[in-house]
Image (tube, rainbow, N blue to C red; front, side, top):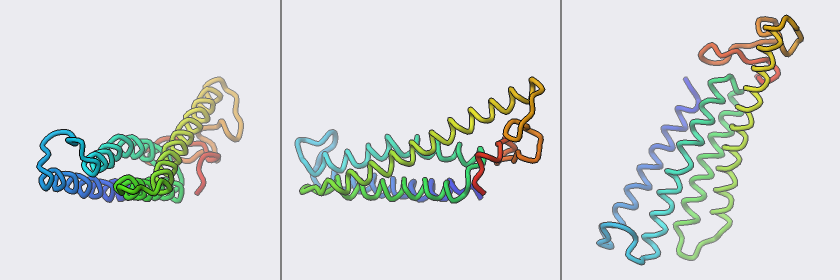
Length: 167
């Protein structure tokens, strides 16, 4: 099973919870569009929209890292950071008397997941490209030999130098 799929499902359910919460609040406050100057409505809208802004992109980066052969523990850590970060952010921003620690922790965890996954993809791409160019030019080294003993195949047949794999 693709690890990211489990967390995508959990995050999808959280998105539905945030959506229903926002819809119920709209109904109880009789606000069809916008926030009508109501601070509670504005906070519910921002929690929902902030989730929608960050989660799909973060999940895509984590999934691509997993597809290139990232260690399962790394993928779990990134997904847990994203999930806990979004829960923390949602709780913090939802409070009228906001405790900014929850908001800050939530964004820090979310940004950490995005930065680490992006960095993994950059380094995996650079090392794979260097390995491919070394292989095509006839040079061979432990890190550059794509078909040698130091190469692993990630999910979906992607070639990933073993130096990038933490398994």
